[in-house]
Image (cartoon, rainbow, N blue to C red; front, side):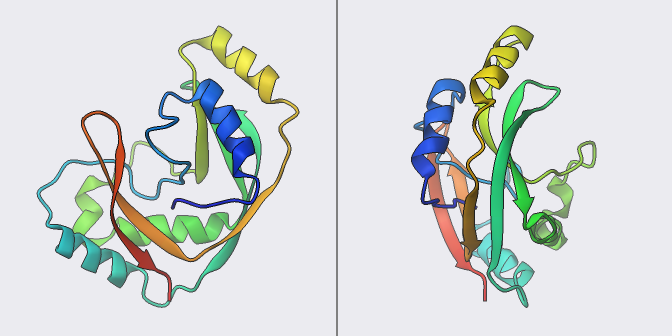
Length: 162
């Protein structure tokens, strides 16, 4: 999901400081993690459309930045978590089931930073401590992206929730 928030510049200020993907990939919530395959775009798009049957647009809210054990900074999903997890689970069915990594629990979030070590992480947490703005949108579509070798993101297709 590539949400556009009213106060998106606040997210981008944090990303510019802490996220090496700033400027390459827009703010997003990952539903399916990157994978390499020979699946034709048309087949993937059909799978996504079939996975979304019966789902309607839904509201989400993101608020509060926390850290992960591997030194990432997450802007957390506070509302709409169950809907996002349902999308994740539906997309990883059928055609994409072989790409699901069951080693990690899926936690909906928007990554706003990646730190190299504990010292950087603590500084980032201190910097983002006052960051309490809520970000609200209604999810209306999903995008498939191709991550190119230089790290740039190219949208492959967009599918609307019915």
